[in-house]
Length: 277
Image (cartoon, rainbow, N blue to C red; front, side, top):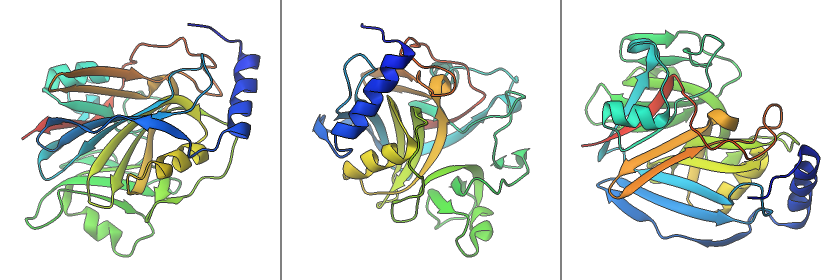
């Protein structure tokens, strides 16, 4: 693979944004059925040669047919694992970052509760998106994604065992809340579509978050809400379902890693996993 200096990479990135519409998609794979309630698709986007693959990987989940699990190193042996290791150790069909973590390498940056265990009791005023699953009452959706400005939102969240707060990318009705920026990175994200399905998304190609949101909107997935889980080398997604065995590791991040040399998963302390019911 051709390697580019930091200077050349930034020039090519700028040229890409200038000359290619963000909605440009030159083809996509059909959704591949992996298990009941689990589908996997690869969406191809135009990107300059030599700067990672122009693909967005998506695992689409029906929360009524799979079991979502919040797995935390702080609740187990305090040992971070790669998403591949989390899958192996807990029999997961897929795993993605549960969010960015603090300097102790254990604690989520936003509020996080798993049953009675509160890893982070503090709600952040900066993070407006919350994912909740595993309801404690019957008759409720198995998973919800909400904006913190919604009325009575805290009361809704009390009805769920797993609650995780993260940085928001899109708010209700698929509204892009990011401003244009020169900062770009590989991205792991979690979203919800207009049918209540959960989406695990991974893109190595370094978009800004405004650009990433616009590309996702252009794919016609019906995404209504989207949250940032991690960026750069620690962004991760592993899939172990059916005949699919995939490990996806981020690389590029404007402030730290300016090339495409990273191909290895980094250990992370918190993941959202999927178990087949």
